[in-house]
Image (cartoon, rainbow, N blue to C red; front, side, top):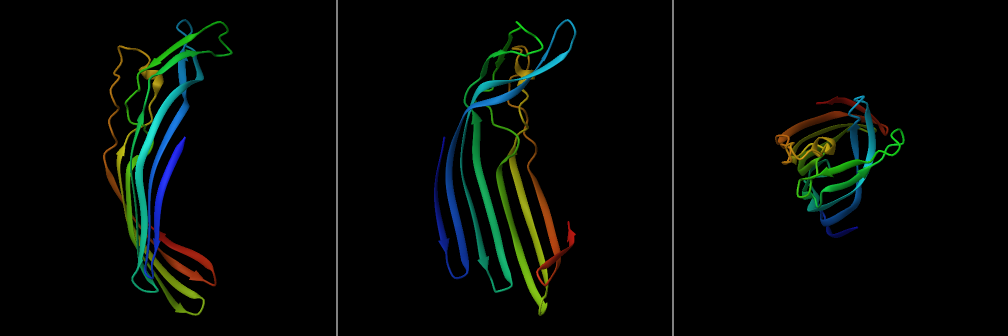
Length: 193
């Protein structure tokens, strides 16, 4: 279930888009690994029932300084949390009659796998050298924050194990510089740093 509300503006030199969203994931599946105690054989199965709430705002824009130069930017800020613990029984076809109890305490933890805070700003320069041949340069910088790893619920099934939020990946920046040439609608990327 999801809902979005957005606003867009297109001016002579400016384009802006802003969007607020909320998404409720229901009955999300996790992969669970069970080790049979006698043989230590690993068996995997899916366990359903997790729910998560994703909510945030995102925006993007462009300001054209001239026909050949523009400044672009985007941001996304969200808070994504698991709403409940994963409780149930797993069954594997190779283990008939065996019910594996699952009780992974994840309620209230952040959803992992991608940064919840993202920003990207850059400059785009495109210059026509002569008819059919142009040069482009696009440096941009990206920020990524609030990035948690994917949860492995197999390691959270034992109440004696650590049930706290896994540590976040440190915030980081990326610098990306692209430059190349276009010739009669054919692009040649010279460098992507």
